Length: 198
Length: 346
Image (tube, rainbow over all chains, first blue to last red; front, side):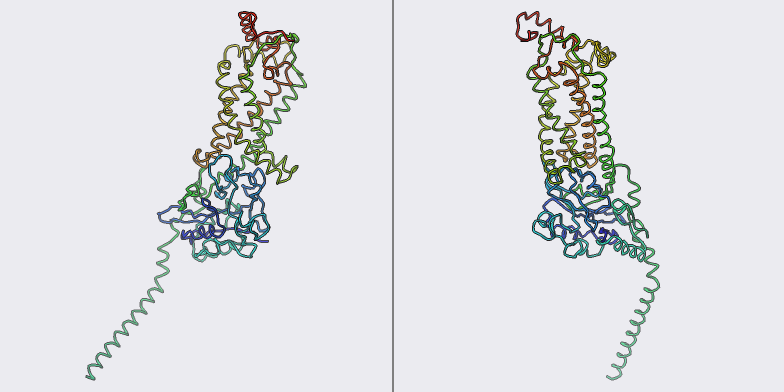
C-alpha cells in the first residue's frame, strides 16, 4: 500500500487559490470551513512564497493521540480520517494539530462546537465508500474511485503534489536538482519527522 | 522602369540579408548570454526557507503568513506548539492526574488504617447544636454535586479512552462522553453560582488568624488521639479547603468560560494554556476534595451531621470547634428557651 502524502512546492505555487475552491466545491464544504488554504509568507517582499496547506495526514498524528473518544483512524494508505458519529466536538484535536486542520461548523457557541471537519485526502469516512451518507458527512471519496485528491490533481502549476510519499518526494527532488533551488517540503518535518534530502 | 525595379529589388535583398544577420546575432547572443543572465537573477536568493523559519521559531510561536480567506486564524501555517500541547496532555497531565488522585486515595486509606475513624472522645452528648443553616447546606450541596459531576466528566476526557472505552465500546463510550460534555458545559454554571454564594456567606469565618497557627502546630489533632487544638467555626484545615475551592474554583471558572467561548480567549497559545491550567487546577482540587470527603464522612464520627441535618453533637463541637461551640452556648444562654442552638436530642 502507498503512504499518501501532500507536498507543496512553494517555488511553483502562484497563490491562485484554485485548490481551495476546488476542495470546497468537490466536497460541498460548509460555509465558514476551509479544509485547504493558501498561506503567503513574507507577502509583498522579495522572495515571498505561498504554500497550500491542509491536513498533512501525519505519521503518529497528534489529533488521534489527544482525541478523548478515539474517533480517528488511519487507513491502509496512511490517510488520517475520523468518525463524525463518535466526535464530540471538544476541540482537543485543534489544540494539538500543528497545521490548524481541524475546524468546527460552529465557532465559540455554547454547549457544542458541532462535529469536527477536516481534509479527508478525498477519501471519505468510515461509511461505505461512495455512498450518499458518506458524501454528506465527509465529501467525495475520490480515492475509492482510483483518483487522487482534487486539489493536487487540478493544480495548474503542479505545485501541489499528492500521492505516495516516495514518488512525490522523488518528483520534488528532481525539480530542485534541475532548477537549482527549493524552499523545502513545507510541513514534512513536522508531519512526517523527515525532510527530503536533496 | 526596369532599372528602377532592379534597384528596388536589390534594396529589398539587402534589407532581408540584414534582418537575417540580426536574427542570427540575436540568437547567438541569447545562446551565449542566457545562462549568465539566469545566474544573476536568482529567484531563490531571498526566498524563505522552511528550515530557517522553523529553526528561528521560539517556543510557542508559529510560522505565519497571509491568507485571503476570512478565517484569519488559518494564517498560521505551522504551529509546532501543538505537539508540545499533545506531549503535555498525553504525558505530563495524565501522570500528574494519576499520581495526585491515586496518591490521595492511598494516603486517605493509609490514614484510615493507621489512625482509624476519629471518634468523639467524650462520647455523644445527646445535645444538638445548629452548625449550618439551610442556605449554607444548600450552597454546599449545590457546589458539591456539580463539582463531582464536573470532576468525573472531566477525568473521563483524560482517562476515559484508556479505562472505559475498552469496556463499553466506541459508540457507547462516545455517546456517554458527549452527554458528559453537555453536563460539564451546563453544570459549570450552577457550580459557579455555588462558588459565589459560598464566598459571600463563609468568607467572614475563613480569614486566617492566630488560632490557625496553634491548630496547625498541633497538626489539627488529626494524628494523635485526645488532642483538640481550639478552633472557631472553621479550623485551619477547613480554611485551606475553603480557599482552595474559592481560588481553584475561580481559576476553573475563568479558564472554563474561555474554553467554552474560545473567541474570548484570544490567541491559539491562550487556548492551549487555558486547557492546561484548567486540567492542572482540577486535578489538584479533586485530590483536595477526596481528603475533604473522607474527613467529612467516614473519617470522623459526627462530622457528616454538619452538612446532613445541619445539627452536630455538642460534644463534637466542643472538641473540634471549641471557641465556636462556646460562642454558640453563650448565645443559647442569652436566648434561654430559644429553638436555635443547643437542644436536647429526642
